Image (tube, rainbow, N blue to C red; front, side):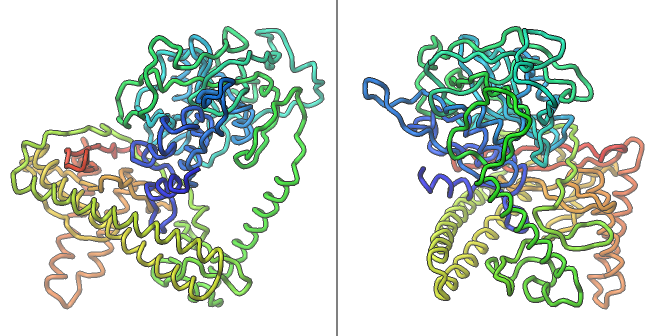
Length: 640
Protein backbone atom coordinates (compact mmCIF):
# COMPACT_ATOMS: atom_id res chain seq x y z
CA UNK A 1 0.00 0.00 0.00
CA UNK A 2 1.29 3.46 -0.91
CA UNK A 3 2.24 5.27 2.36
CA UNK A 4 1.06 8.46 0.72
CA UNK A 5 -2.52 7.15 0.84
CA UNK A 6 -2.43 7.09 4.65
CA UNK A 7 -0.70 10.46 4.80
CA UNK A 8 -3.34 12.09 2.61
CA UNK A 9 -6.11 10.67 4.77
CA UNK A 10 -4.40 11.84 7.98
CA UNK A 11 -4.05 15.32 6.50
CA UNK A 12 -7.74 15.50 5.55
CA UNK A 13 -9.27 14.27 8.81
CA UNK A 14 -10.40 17.22 11.01
CA UNK A 15 -8.61 17.69 14.34
CA UNK A 16 -9.89 18.58 17.79
CA UNK A 17 -8.40 21.49 19.79
CA UNK A 18 -5.70 19.15 21.12
CA UNK A 19 -4.66 18.13 17.62
CA UNK A 20 -6.11 14.62 17.89
CA UNK A 21 -8.26 13.19 15.07
CA UNK A 22 -11.84 14.34 15.52
CA UNK A 23 -14.39 11.66 16.28
CA UNK A 24 -17.50 11.51 14.10
CA UNK A 25 -16.25 13.89 11.37
CA UNK A 26 -18.65 15.08 8.67
CA UNK A 27 -18.80 12.23 6.10
CA UNK A 28 -19.42 14.74 3.31
CA UNK A 29 -15.95 16.20 3.79
CA UNK A 30 -12.95 15.26 1.67
CA UNK A 31 -11.57 12.66 4.10
CA UNK A 32 -14.25 10.09 3.26
CA UNK A 33 -13.25 10.20 -0.41
CA UNK A 34 -9.68 9.35 0.61
CA UNK A 35 -10.56 6.18 2.54
CA UNK A 36 -9.99 4.14 -0.63
CA UNK A 37 -7.36 6.53 -1.94
CA UNK A 38 -6.64 6.13 -5.62
CA UNK A 39 -10.17 4.91 -6.26
CA UNK A 40 -11.60 1.78 -7.78
CA UNK A 41 -9.45 2.17 -10.90
CA UNK A 42 -6.41 1.15 -8.84
CA UNK A 43 -5.81 -2.63 -8.88
CA UNK A 44 -7.03 -4.13 -5.62
CA UNK A 45 -9.31 -1.19 -4.78
CA UNK A 46 -12.32 -2.34 -6.78
CA UNK A 47 -12.80 -5.53 -4.74
CA UNK A 48 -11.99 -4.44 -1.18
CA UNK A 49 -15.34 -3.18 0.13
CA UNK A 50 -15.13 -5.20 3.36
CA UNK A 51 -11.91 -3.47 4.34
CA UNK A 52 -13.28 -0.12 3.12
CA UNK A 53 -16.20 -0.46 5.53
CA UNK A 54 -13.90 -1.39 8.44
CA UNK A 55 -11.35 1.36 7.77
CA UNK A 56 -14.12 3.95 7.43
CA UNK A 57 -15.41 3.08 10.89
CA UNK A 58 -11.89 3.24 12.33
CA UNK A 59 -11.59 6.80 11.02
CA UNK A 60 -15.13 7.65 12.16
CA UNK A 61 -14.28 6.61 15.72
CA UNK A 62 -11.05 8.66 15.80
CA UNK A 63 -8.35 6.35 14.41
CA UNK A 64 -7.76 7.30 10.75
CA UNK A 65 -7.01 4.19 8.69
CA UNK A 66 -6.93 4.07 4.91
CA UNK A 67 -8.37 0.87 3.45
CA UNK A 68 -6.02 -1.85 2.29
CA UNK A 69 -6.17 -2.84 -1.38
CA UNK A 70 -7.03 -6.43 -2.15
CA UNK A 71 -3.92 -8.59 -2.58
CA UNK A 72 -3.39 -8.95 -6.32
CA UNK A 73 -4.06 -12.37 -7.82
CA UNK A 74 -4.23 -13.60 -11.38
CA UNK A 75 -7.00 -15.31 -13.28
CA UNK A 76 -6.33 -18.66 -14.92
CA UNK A 77 -5.55 -16.91 -18.20
CA UNK A 78 -2.87 -14.80 -16.48
CA UNK A 79 -4.83 -11.54 -16.47
CA UNK A 80 -5.15 -9.48 -13.29
CA UNK A 81 -8.02 -10.61 -11.05
CA UNK A 82 -10.00 -7.45 -10.22
CA UNK A 83 -13.11 -9.19 -8.92
CA UNK A 84 -12.45 -11.99 -6.41
CA UNK A 85 -13.53 -10.82 -2.95
CA UNK A 86 -11.84 -11.04 0.44
CA UNK A 87 -11.60 -14.56 1.79
CA UNK A 88 -13.96 -15.10 4.75
CA UNK A 89 -15.03 -11.46 4.62
CA UNK A 90 -18.03 -11.94 6.88
CA UNK A 91 -16.10 -13.86 9.54
CA UNK A 92 -13.44 -11.14 9.44
CA UNK A 93 -16.13 -8.51 9.90
CA UNK A 94 -17.65 -10.33 12.88
CA UNK A 95 -14.23 -10.70 14.44
CA UNK A 96 -13.42 -7.02 13.90
CA UNK A 97 -16.75 -5.67 15.17
CA UNK A 98 -17.21 -8.13 18.03
CA UNK A 99 -20.78 -9.02 17.03
CA UNK A 100 -22.64 -11.01 14.37
CA UNK A 101 -24.67 -9.53 11.55
CA UNK A 102 -28.33 -8.74 12.15
CA UNK A 103 -30.93 -9.34 9.46
CA UNK A 104 -32.66 -5.99 8.88
CA UNK A 105 -35.19 -6.93 6.20
CA UNK A 106 -35.66 -6.77 2.46
CA UNK A 107 -35.12 -3.72 0.33
CA UNK A 108 -36.13 -0.33 1.66
CA UNK A 109 -37.64 -1.81 4.82
CA UNK A 110 -34.21 -3.15 5.75
CA UNK A 111 -32.60 0.25 5.25
CA UNK A 112 -35.31 1.87 7.37
CA UNK A 113 -34.65 -0.53 10.24
CA UNK A 114 -30.94 0.30 10.13
CA UNK A 115 -31.74 4.03 10.21
CA UNK A 116 -34.09 3.45 13.17
CA UNK A 117 -31.37 1.59 15.08
CA UNK A 118 -28.88 4.41 14.52
CA UNK A 119 -31.40 7.07 15.56
CA UNK A 120 -32.11 5.18 18.78
CA UNK A 121 -28.39 4.75 19.41
CA UNK A 122 -27.83 8.50 19.00
CA UNK A 123 -25.24 10.70 17.28
CA UNK A 124 -21.89 9.03 16.71
CA UNK A 125 -23.38 5.58 16.18
CA UNK A 126 -22.53 3.73 12.98
CA UNK A 127 -23.07 0.45 11.17
CA UNK A 128 -21.56 -1.90 8.66
CA UNK A 129 -24.25 -2.49 6.04
CA UNK A 130 -24.21 -5.58 3.84
CA UNK A 131 -26.66 -6.32 1.05
CA UNK A 132 -27.44 -9.16 -1.33
CA UNK A 133 -27.81 -8.32 -5.00
CA UNK A 134 -30.98 -9.19 -6.84
CA UNK A 135 -29.08 -11.42 -9.29
CA UNK A 136 -26.60 -12.85 -6.80
CA UNK A 137 -23.58 -11.52 -4.92
CA UNK A 138 -23.48 -8.62 -2.50
CA UNK A 139 -21.68 -5.55 -1.17
CA UNK A 140 -20.57 -3.90 2.10
CA UNK A 141 -20.69 -0.20 2.96
CA UNK A 142 -21.66 1.99 5.96
CA UNK A 143 -24.29 4.16 7.59
CA UNK A 144 -23.68 6.71 10.37
CA UNK A 145 -25.63 9.04 12.65
CA UNK A 146 -23.91 12.38 12.11
CA UNK A 147 -25.39 15.01 14.43
CA UNK A 148 -28.77 13.31 14.34
CA UNK A 149 -28.77 12.81 10.57
CA UNK A 150 -28.41 9.39 8.94
CA UNK A 151 -25.80 9.40 6.17
CA UNK A 152 -25.09 6.40 3.92
CA UNK A 153 -21.45 6.10 2.88
CA UNK A 154 -19.70 3.86 0.34
CA UNK A 155 -16.04 4.79 0.61
CA UNK A 156 -14.98 2.25 -1.98
CA UNK A 157 -16.61 4.35 -4.68
CA UNK A 158 -16.47 7.70 -2.85
CA UNK A 159 -20.24 8.03 -2.46
CA UNK A 160 -22.18 9.62 0.41
CA UNK A 161 -25.88 10.34 0.49
CA UNK A 162 -28.76 11.26 2.78
CA UNK A 163 -30.71 8.58 0.91
CA UNK A 164 -29.92 4.85 1.20
CA UNK A 165 -27.43 3.57 -1.36
CA UNK A 166 -27.87 0.69 -3.80
CA UNK A 167 -31.61 0.25 -3.19
CA UNK A 168 -32.32 -0.66 -6.81
CA UNK A 169 -30.05 -3.71 -6.70
CA UNK A 170 -30.39 -4.84 -3.06
CA UNK A 171 -32.70 -7.55 -1.74
CA UNK A 172 -31.81 -8.86 1.75
CA UNK A 173 -30.16 -6.25 3.98
CA UNK A 174 -27.94 -6.95 7.03
CA UNK A 175 -26.03 -4.77 9.46
CA UNK A 176 -23.73 -4.67 12.49
CA UNK A 177 -24.66 -1.50 14.41
CA UNK A 178 -22.25 0.09 16.92
CA UNK A 179 -22.88 2.86 19.44
CA UNK A 180 -20.81 6.05 19.75
CA UNK A 181 -18.29 4.18 21.91
CA UNK A 182 -17.91 1.47 19.23
CA UNK A 183 -19.83 -1.10 21.26
CA UNK A 184 -22.18 -3.48 19.41
CA UNK A 185 -25.87 -2.74 19.85
CA UNK A 186 -26.58 -6.46 19.53
CA UNK A 187 -23.74 -8.44 21.15
CA UNK A 188 -23.73 -12.14 20.38
CA UNK A 189 -25.75 -14.07 23.01
CA UNK A 190 -23.98 -16.70 25.07
CA UNK A 191 -25.56 -20.08 24.35
CA UNK A 192 -25.17 -22.28 27.38
CA UNK A 193 -25.31 -26.06 27.40
CA UNK A 194 -25.98 -26.28 23.70
CA UNK A 195 -24.62 -29.06 21.52
CA UNK A 196 -23.41 -28.32 18.06
CA UNK A 197 -26.41 -29.90 16.39
CA UNK A 198 -28.83 -27.60 18.21
CA UNK A 199 -27.62 -24.64 16.19
CA UNK A 200 -28.84 -26.11 12.91
CA UNK A 201 -32.62 -25.80 12.79
CA UNK A 202 -35.17 -25.82 9.98
CA UNK A 203 -36.27 -22.49 8.51
CA UNK A 204 -38.55 -20.33 10.69
CA UNK A 205 -38.20 -22.45 13.81
CA UNK A 206 -39.75 -20.78 16.81
CA UNK A 207 -36.54 -20.81 18.82
CA UNK A 208 -35.07 -18.18 16.53
CA UNK A 209 -31.69 -19.89 16.22
CA UNK A 210 -29.71 -19.54 13.00
CA UNK A 211 -30.33 -22.05 10.26
CA UNK A 212 -27.75 -24.50 9.01
CA UNK A 213 -25.05 -22.87 6.94
CA UNK A 214 -25.01 -23.52 3.21
CA UNK A 215 -21.81 -22.74 1.31
CA UNK A 216 -22.15 -20.77 -1.89
CA UNK A 217 -20.58 -21.78 -5.16
CA UNK A 218 -17.25 -20.39 -6.28
CA UNK A 219 -18.19 -17.32 -8.28
CA UNK A 220 -16.66 -14.09 -9.34
CA UNK A 221 -16.98 -10.60 -8.09
CA UNK A 222 -16.84 -7.96 -5.44
CA UNK A 223 -15.88 -4.37 -5.67
CA UNK A 224 -15.80 -4.54 -2.01
CA UNK A 225 -13.81 -7.24 -0.36
CA UNK A 226 -10.89 -9.26 -1.33
CA UNK A 227 -10.41 -12.97 -2.02
CA UNK A 228 -12.12 -16.16 -3.10
CA UNK A 229 -14.66 -16.94 -0.41
CA UNK A 230 -16.52 -14.97 2.21
CA UNK A 231 -19.30 -15.76 4.63
CA UNK A 232 -22.89 -14.70 4.22
CA UNK A 233 -24.55 -12.85 7.09
CA UNK A 234 -27.14 -14.65 9.18
CA UNK A 235 -30.50 -14.72 7.48
CA UNK A 236 -32.57 -15.41 10.58
CA UNK A 237 -34.14 -13.31 13.26
CA UNK A 238 -31.83 -12.62 16.21
CA UNK A 239 -32.54 -14.30 19.51
CA UNK A 240 -34.58 -12.50 22.14
CA UNK A 241 -31.47 -11.13 23.77
CA UNK A 242 -30.63 -9.33 20.54
CA UNK A 243 -33.98 -7.65 19.96
CA UNK A 244 -34.08 -3.85 20.03
CA UNK A 245 -36.40 -2.58 22.75
CA UNK A 246 -39.00 -1.14 20.42
CA UNK A 247 -39.51 -3.42 17.45
CA UNK A 248 -39.71 -7.01 16.29
CA UNK A 249 -37.14 -7.87 13.68
CA UNK A 250 -38.12 -9.33 10.30
CA UNK A 251 -37.30 -12.77 8.96
CA UNK A 252 -35.82 -13.32 5.50
CA UNK A 253 -37.48 -15.49 2.93
CA UNK A 254 -34.38 -17.45 2.00
CA UNK A 255 -31.45 -18.98 3.81
CA UNK A 256 -28.48 -18.50 1.51
CA UNK A 257 -27.52 -15.95 -1.15
CA UNK A 258 -27.62 -16.71 -4.81
CA UNK A 259 -24.41 -17.09 -6.77
CA UNK A 260 -22.40 -13.96 -7.30
CA UNK A 261 -21.91 -12.30 -10.65
CA UNK A 262 -19.37 -9.57 -11.32
CA UNK A 263 -20.62 -6.09 -12.06
CA UNK A 264 -19.20 -6.28 -15.57
CA UNK A 265 -21.77 -8.97 -16.40
CA UNK A 266 -24.78 -6.93 -15.41
CA UNK A 267 -26.56 -5.28 -18.28
CA UNK A 268 -26.37 -1.90 -16.59
CA UNK A 269 -22.67 -2.10 -15.85
CA UNK A 270 -20.39 0.72 -16.92
CA UNK A 271 -16.60 1.11 -16.73
CA UNK A 272 -15.46 1.22 -13.11
CA UNK A 273 -12.32 3.29 -13.41
CA UNK A 274 -13.55 6.64 -12.04
CA UNK A 275 -15.03 7.10 -8.54
CA UNK A 276 -18.08 9.32 -8.31
CA UNK A 277 -17.87 12.59 -6.36
CA UNK A 278 -19.36 12.88 -2.89
CA UNK A 279 -22.64 14.75 -3.06
CA UNK A 280 -25.53 14.57 -0.60
CA UNK A 281 -28.21 13.53 -3.07
CA UNK A 282 -26.47 12.27 -6.20
CA UNK A 283 -27.86 9.09 -7.78
CA UNK A 284 -26.04 5.87 -7.08
CA UNK A 285 -24.82 4.24 -10.29
CA UNK A 286 -24.95 0.49 -10.40
CA UNK A 287 -21.22 0.10 -10.92
CA UNK A 288 -20.64 0.96 -7.26
CA UNK A 289 -22.81 -2.02 -6.37
CA UNK A 290 -19.98 -4.51 -6.53
CA UNK A 291 -20.34 -8.13 -5.52
CA UNK A 292 -19.24 -9.64 -2.20
CA UNK A 293 -19.12 -13.32 -1.23
CA UNK A 294 -20.30 -14.82 2.05
CA UNK A 295 -20.30 -18.40 3.43
CA UNK A 296 -23.03 -18.93 6.00
CA UNK A 297 -20.82 -20.83 8.45
CA UNK A 298 -19.85 -17.63 10.20
CA UNK A 299 -23.36 -17.19 11.58
CA UNK A 300 -22.46 -19.96 14.04
CA UNK A 301 -20.09 -17.60 15.85
CA UNK A 302 -22.09 -17.22 19.06
CA UNK A 303 -19.84 -14.90 21.00
CA UNK A 304 -18.00 -11.71 20.19
CA UNK A 305 -14.42 -12.33 19.18
CA UNK A 306 -12.99 -8.96 19.99
CA UNK A 307 -9.68 -7.98 18.50
CA UNK A 308 -7.98 -5.72 16.05
CA UNK A 309 -8.51 -5.71 12.34
CA UNK A 310 -7.32 -9.21 11.36
CA UNK A 311 -4.05 -9.25 9.44
CA UNK A 312 -4.93 -12.51 7.73
CA UNK A 313 -8.24 -14.10 6.84
CA UNK A 314 -10.33 -15.52 9.67
CA UNK A 315 -11.62 -19.07 9.24
CA UNK A 316 -15.41 -19.42 9.47
CA UNK A 317 -16.72 -21.22 12.54
CA UNK A 318 -18.12 -24.60 11.55
CA UNK A 319 -19.97 -25.19 14.84
CA UNK A 320 -21.12 -23.13 17.80
CA UNK A 321 -18.67 -22.69 20.64
CA UNK A 322 -19.16 -21.29 24.11
CA UNK A 323 -16.09 -19.09 23.91
CA UNK A 324 -13.17 -18.94 21.53
CA UNK A 325 -9.83 -19.27 23.26
CA UNK A 326 -7.69 -16.15 23.31
CA UNK A 327 -4.73 -16.38 20.96
CA UNK A 328 -1.21 -15.60 22.11
CA UNK A 329 -1.15 -12.48 19.94
CA UNK A 330 -4.46 -11.28 21.39
CA UNK A 331 -3.24 -11.97 24.92
CA UNK A 332 -0.13 -9.85 24.31
CA UNK A 333 -2.24 -7.06 22.82
CA UNK A 334 -4.64 -7.14 25.77
CA UNK A 335 -1.85 -7.13 28.35
CA UNK A 336 -0.09 -4.30 26.54
CA UNK A 337 -3.31 -2.26 26.47
CA UNK A 338 -3.97 -2.95 30.15
CA UNK A 339 -0.41 -1.99 31.04
CA UNK A 340 -0.75 1.21 29.02
CA UNK A 341 -3.96 2.15 30.83
CA UNK A 342 -2.28 1.52 34.18
CA UNK A 343 0.52 3.91 33.21
CA UNK A 344 -1.94 6.60 32.11
CA UNK A 345 -4.00 6.28 35.29
CA UNK A 346 -0.85 6.63 37.38
CA UNK A 347 0.16 9.72 35.41
CA UNK A 348 -3.33 11.26 35.72
CA UNK A 349 -3.21 10.82 39.47
CA UNK A 350 -0.01 12.87 39.51
CA UNK A 351 -1.48 15.46 37.13
CA UNK A 352 -4.36 16.09 39.55
CA UNK A 353 -2.16 16.20 42.66
CA UNK A 354 -1.52 19.91 43.45
CA UNK A 355 1.50 18.94 45.54
CA UNK A 356 3.14 17.07 42.67
CA UNK A 357 5.03 19.12 40.09
CA UNK A 358 4.02 16.75 37.28
CA UNK A 359 1.46 19.10 35.67
CA UNK A 360 3.71 22.16 35.81
CA UNK A 361 6.60 20.20 34.36
CA UNK A 362 4.85 18.75 31.31
CA UNK A 363 1.77 20.90 30.54
CA UNK A 364 0.91 24.50 29.74
CA UNK A 365 -0.64 26.21 32.74
CA UNK A 366 -3.58 27.84 30.96
CA UNK A 367 -4.96 25.01 28.82
CA UNK A 368 -3.36 21.67 29.69
CA UNK A 369 -1.63 21.25 26.33
CA UNK A 370 1.60 19.27 26.48
CA UNK A 371 4.73 21.41 26.37
CA UNK A 372 6.38 18.84 24.11
CA UNK A 373 4.45 16.21 22.20
CA UNK A 374 7.08 13.51 22.65
CA UNK A 375 7.85 14.20 26.30
CA UNK A 376 8.40 11.19 28.54
CA UNK A 377 8.32 11.03 32.32
CA UNK A 378 11.13 9.72 34.50
CA UNK A 379 9.97 6.16 33.81
CA UNK A 380 10.26 6.63 30.07
CA UNK A 381 6.48 6.69 29.50
CA UNK A 382 4.96 9.15 27.02
CA UNK A 383 3.05 12.05 28.55
CA UNK A 384 -0.69 11.64 27.75
CA UNK A 385 -3.03 14.21 26.24
CA UNK A 386 -5.45 15.47 28.88
CA UNK A 387 -8.72 17.36 29.07
CA UNK A 388 -10.91 18.78 31.83
CA UNK A 389 -13.80 16.53 32.82
CA UNK A 390 -16.25 19.45 33.01
CA UNK A 391 -18.00 18.03 36.08
CA UNK A 392 -17.56 18.54 39.82
CA UNK A 393 -15.11 17.87 41.22
CA UNK A 394 -13.12 19.34 38.31
CA UNK A 395 -10.13 17.26 37.34
CA UNK A 396 -8.00 16.34 34.38
CA UNK A 397 -8.84 13.15 32.49
CA UNK A 398 -7.27 11.40 29.51
CA UNK A 399 -8.33 13.06 26.26
CA UNK A 400 -9.38 9.64 25.00
CA UNK A 401 -11.91 9.40 27.86
CA UNK A 402 -13.75 12.61 26.96
CA UNK A 403 -17.41 11.60 26.47
CA UNK A 404 -19.16 12.24 23.16
CA UNK A 405 -20.97 15.57 23.06
CA UNK A 406 -24.75 15.89 22.98
CA UNK A 407 -25.60 16.78 19.39
CA UNK A 408 -28.05 19.43 18.18
CA UNK A 409 -31.47 19.06 16.64
CA UNK A 410 -32.37 20.92 13.47
CA UNK A 411 -35.25 22.82 11.93
CA UNK A 412 -33.41 22.68 8.59
CA UNK A 413 -30.11 21.07 7.71
CA UNK A 414 -27.57 21.60 4.93
CA UNK A 415 -29.59 23.98 2.79
CA UNK A 416 -27.32 24.86 -0.14
CA UNK A 417 -27.35 28.30 -1.75
CA UNK A 418 -25.25 28.50 -4.91
CA UNK A 419 -26.41 31.77 -6.50
CA UNK A 420 -23.40 34.05 -6.32
CA UNK A 421 -24.75 36.66 -8.75
CA UNK A 422 -26.39 38.50 -5.86
CA UNK A 423 -22.96 39.33 -4.42
CA UNK A 424 -21.52 42.77 -4.95
CA UNK A 425 -18.38 42.77 -7.15
CA UNK A 426 -16.36 43.84 -4.13
CA UNK A 427 -17.57 41.02 -1.86
CA UNK A 428 -17.27 38.46 -4.62
CA UNK A 429 -13.66 39.47 -5.20
CA UNK A 430 -12.96 39.19 -1.45
CA UNK A 431 -14.46 35.71 -1.27
CA UNK A 432 -12.54 34.53 -4.33
CA UNK A 433 -9.32 35.81 -2.76
CA UNK A 434 -10.17 33.88 0.42
CA UNK A 435 -10.43 30.71 -1.69
CA UNK A 436 -6.98 31.31 -3.18
CA UNK A 437 -5.46 32.20 0.18
CA UNK A 438 -6.92 29.06 1.74
CA UNK A 439 -5.58 26.91 -1.12
CA UNK A 440 -2.08 28.29 -0.58
CA UNK A 441 -2.31 27.63 3.15
CA UNK A 442 -3.50 24.06 2.58
CA UNK A 443 -0.58 23.46 0.23
CA UNK A 444 1.84 24.68 2.88
CA UNK A 445 0.14 22.49 5.47
CA UNK A 446 0.54 19.43 3.25
CA UNK A 447 4.26 20.15 2.93
CA UNK A 448 4.59 20.71 6.68
CA UNK A 449 2.82 17.43 7.44
CA UNK A 450 5.03 15.52 5.01
CA UNK A 451 8.12 17.06 6.60
CA UNK A 452 6.79 16.17 10.06
CA UNK A 453 6.24 12.55 8.98
CA UNK A 454 9.81 12.34 7.71
CA UNK A 455 11.12 13.79 10.95
CA UNK A 456 9.01 11.33 12.97
CA UNK A 457 10.37 8.41 10.96
CA UNK A 458 13.94 9.62 11.39
CA UNK A 459 13.56 9.96 15.15
CA UNK A 460 11.84 6.60 15.44
CA UNK A 461 14.72 4.98 13.57
CA UNK A 462 17.41 6.77 15.56
CA UNK A 463 16.51 8.65 18.76
CA UNK A 464 19.42 11.08 18.69
CA UNK A 465 19.26 14.62 20.14
CA UNK A 466 19.67 16.02 16.63
CA UNK A 467 16.76 14.01 15.27
CA UNK A 468 14.65 15.05 18.26
CA UNK A 469 15.47 18.68 17.56
CA UNK A 470 14.48 18.23 13.91
CA UNK A 471 11.25 16.54 14.95
CA UNK A 472 10.33 19.34 17.35
CA UNK A 473 11.08 21.95 14.70
CA UNK A 474 8.93 20.11 12.17
CA UNK A 475 6.14 19.84 14.74
CA UNK A 476 6.24 23.59 15.35
CA UNK A 477 6.10 24.33 11.62
CA UNK A 478 3.16 21.96 11.16
CA UNK A 479 1.31 23.54 14.11
CA UNK A 480 1.83 27.01 12.67
CA UNK A 481 0.64 25.86 9.24
CA UNK A 482 -2.40 24.21 10.77
CA UNK A 483 -3.24 27.37 12.73
CA UNK A 484 -3.00 29.44 9.56
CA UNK A 485 -5.47 27.15 7.78
CA UNK A 486 -7.81 27.38 10.78
CA UNK A 487 -7.56 31.18 10.97
CA UNK A 488 -8.20 31.59 7.24
CA UNK A 489 -11.15 29.20 7.45
CA UNK A 490 -12.69 31.19 10.30
CA UNK A 491 -12.24 34.48 8.44
CA UNK A 492 -13.66 32.90 5.28
CA UNK A 493 -16.69 31.63 7.20
CA UNK A 494 -17.41 34.98 8.82
CA UNK A 495 -17.12 36.85 5.52
CA UNK A 496 -19.44 34.33 3.85
CA UNK A 497 -21.98 34.71 6.66
CA UNK A 498 -22.04 38.50 6.62
CA UNK A 499 -21.46 39.31 2.94
CA UNK A 500 -23.55 36.55 1.40
CA UNK A 501 -25.77 34.46 3.69
CA UNK A 502 -27.17 37.21 5.92
CA UNK A 503 -27.27 39.75 3.10
CA UNK A 504 -29.33 37.29 1.06
CA UNK A 505 -31.49 35.69 3.77
CA UNK A 506 -32.02 38.64 6.15
CA UNK A 507 -31.08 41.87 4.35
CA UNK A 508 -33.01 43.91 6.91
CA UNK A 509 -31.01 42.60 9.90
CA UNK A 510 -28.28 44.62 11.64
CA UNK A 511 -25.04 43.16 13.02
CA UNK A 512 -24.94 43.92 16.76
CA UNK A 513 -22.01 41.70 17.83
CA UNK A 514 -19.27 39.83 16.04
CA UNK A 515 -15.80 39.92 14.62
CA UNK A 516 -14.11 39.19 17.95
CA UNK A 517 -11.79 36.19 17.96
CA UNK A 518 -11.78 33.75 20.84
CA UNK A 519 -13.80 31.07 22.53
CA UNK A 520 -16.91 31.38 24.71
CA UNK A 521 -18.74 33.79 22.45
CA UNK A 522 -21.01 33.67 19.41
CA UNK A 523 -19.42 34.45 16.05
CA UNK A 524 -22.13 36.90 14.95
CA UNK A 525 -25.36 38.25 16.46
CA UNK A 526 -27.85 40.01 14.19
CA UNK A 527 -31.07 41.82 15.16
CA UNK A 528 -34.17 42.24 12.99
CA UNK A 529 -36.22 45.46 13.00
CA UNK A 530 -38.89 43.66 15.07
CA UNK A 531 -36.38 42.93 17.86
CA UNK A 532 -35.89 39.23 17.10
CA UNK A 533 -32.37 37.84 16.72
CA UNK A 534 -30.33 35.62 14.40
CA UNK A 535 -27.23 34.11 16.02
CA UNK A 536 -24.66 32.76 13.54
CA UNK A 537 -21.89 30.23 14.03
CA UNK A 538 -19.63 30.86 11.02
CA UNK A 539 -17.51 27.84 10.08
CA UNK A 540 -14.72 27.26 7.59
CA UNK A 541 -15.39 25.00 4.57
CA UNK A 542 -14.03 21.87 6.30
CA UNK A 543 -14.75 22.78 9.93
CA UNK A 544 -17.15 20.85 12.13
CA UNK A 545 -19.23 22.13 15.02
CA UNK A 546 -17.26 22.85 18.17
CA UNK A 547 -17.78 21.10 21.50
CA UNK A 548 -17.42 22.10 25.15
CA UNK A 549 -18.73 21.32 28.61
CA UNK A 550 -22.01 23.09 29.26
CA UNK A 551 -23.23 24.78 32.43
CA UNK A 552 -24.82 21.53 33.68
CA UNK A 553 -21.57 19.56 33.31
CA UNK A 554 -22.62 17.74 30.13
CA UNK A 555 -20.43 17.88 27.06
CA UNK A 556 -22.45 19.62 24.35
CA UNK A 557 -22.04 20.63 20.73
CA UNK A 558 -22.57 24.01 19.17
CA UNK A 559 -26.18 24.21 18.10
CA UNK A 560 -27.68 22.79 21.29
CA UNK A 561 -29.83 24.83 23.67
CA UNK A 562 -27.43 24.13 26.55
CA UNK A 563 -24.50 25.41 24.49
CA UNK A 564 -26.47 28.59 23.76
CA UNK A 565 -27.32 29.03 27.45
CA UNK A 566 -23.70 28.43 28.45
CA UNK A 567 -22.45 31.14 26.09
CA UNK A 568 -24.96 33.56 27.65
CA UNK A 569 -23.52 32.76 31.08
CA UNK A 570 -20.01 33.37 29.70
CA UNK A 571 -21.11 36.75 28.35
CA UNK A 572 -22.51 37.76 31.74
CA UNK A 573 -19.43 36.54 33.60
CA UNK A 574 -17.13 38.43 31.23
CA UNK A 575 -19.11 41.63 31.61
CA UNK A 576 -19.07 41.33 35.41
CA UNK A 577 -15.28 41.01 35.34
CA UNK A 578 -14.79 44.01 33.06
CA UNK A 579 -17.53 46.45 34.05
CA UNK A 580 -15.33 48.07 36.73
CA UNK A 581 -12.30 48.41 34.47
CA UNK A 582 -10.33 51.65 34.53
CA UNK A 583 -10.57 51.74 30.74
CA UNK A 584 -13.72 53.50 29.56
CA UNK A 585 -14.03 51.52 26.32
CA UNK A 586 -13.73 48.24 28.22
CA UNK A 587 -16.48 49.32 30.64
CA UNK A 588 -18.79 50.34 27.79
CA UNK A 589 -18.18 47.06 25.96
CA UNK A 590 -18.94 45.12 29.16
CA UNK A 591 -22.22 47.00 29.68
CA UNK A 592 -23.28 46.34 26.07
CA UNK A 593 -22.40 42.65 26.32
CA UNK A 594 -24.39 42.29 29.53
CA UNK A 595 -27.42 43.99 27.96
CA UNK A 596 -27.14 41.78 24.86
CA UNK A 597 -26.93 38.63 26.99
CA UNK A 598 -30.14 39.67 28.80
CA UNK A 599 -31.90 40.36 25.50
CA UNK A 600 -30.83 37.02 24.00
CA UNK A 601 -31.92 35.17 27.14
CA UNK A 602 -35.36 36.80 26.94
CA UNK A 603 -35.60 35.92 23.25
CA UNK A 604 -34.60 32.32 23.97
CA UNK A 605 -37.32 31.91 26.60
CA UNK A 606 -40.04 33.85 24.75
CA UNK A 607 -43.25 32.18 23.52
CA UNK A 608 -42.80 31.75 20.62
CA UNK A 609 -39.01 31.74 20.64
CA UNK A 610 -37.60 35.01 19.29
CA UNK A 611 -34.13 33.92 18.20
CA UNK A 612 -32.85 31.80 15.33
CA UNK A 613 -29.59 29.91 15.76
CA UNK A 614 -27.84 28.98 12.50
CA UNK A 615 -24.51 27.84 11.12
CA UNK A 616 -23.05 29.01 7.80
CA UNK A 617 -20.23 27.34 5.86
CA UNK A 618 -18.77 28.49 2.53
CA UNK A 619 -18.72 26.08 -0.41
CA UNK A 620 -15.64 25.69 -2.58
CA UNK A 621 -15.90 23.86 -5.89
CA UNK A 622 -13.10 23.47 -8.41
CA UNK A 623 -11.01 26.07 -6.58
CA UNK A 624 -13.74 28.71 -6.81
CA UNK A 625 -16.28 30.16 -4.40
CA UNK A 626 -19.56 28.30 -4.91
CA UNK A 627 -21.98 29.71 -2.34
CA UNK A 628 -22.76 28.54 1.17
CA UNK A 629 -24.48 25.86 3.23
CA UNK A 630 -26.90 26.97 5.97
CA UNK A 631 -28.39 24.89 8.76
CA UNK A 632 -30.86 26.10 11.40
CA UNK A 633 -30.67 24.54 14.85
CA UNK A 634 -33.68 23.72 17.00
CA UNK A 635 -33.12 25.32 20.42
CA UNK A 636 -36.72 25.49 21.56
CA UNK A 637 -37.66 24.48 25.11
CA UNK A 638 -37.25 20.77 25.69
CA UNK A 639 -34.37 20.44 23.23
CA UNK A 640 -30.93 19.47 24.61
